Image (tube, rainbow, N blue to C red; front, side, top):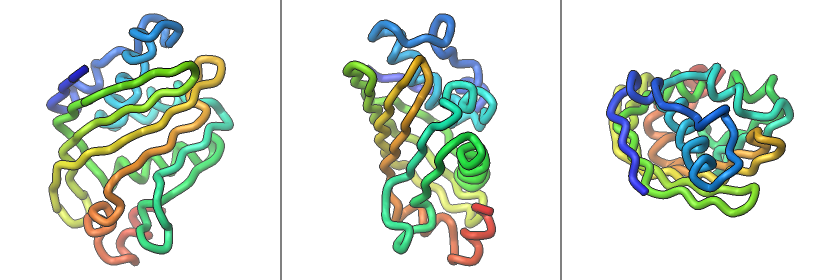
Length: 165
């Protein structure tokens, strides 16, 4: 499966599947792709609607090695964390390379152009997300990215911490 979205406007117009449900494999893929597209578009409201109130979000990695390695549990932490990441990392040219769905879990491999609003640096990078669903909502979202590259794009630690605050 390959899905391309070249700009925020196109990503914003993506659908999340009929009725926002993911009860068939094709719908599940469309639902997940829609969530990823909403992130690229910077659409926090749409993303938040599809996450459980007690969701767990993690950007995998060692927080000692990279400030981008963050965890958020529950809507109170999730929204501000995602908003801060979207503010720092502007994404475009989305290319979803594959989505694998098995039961209540899914894995997504995607590639995107990312620009740092802190340093102005740009790169193309791959990401992988492992998503778990509960009652038609995202219960857990674990994202793997190049944390060393992300750390460089955040600038010095004091700048990155301020941007994430």
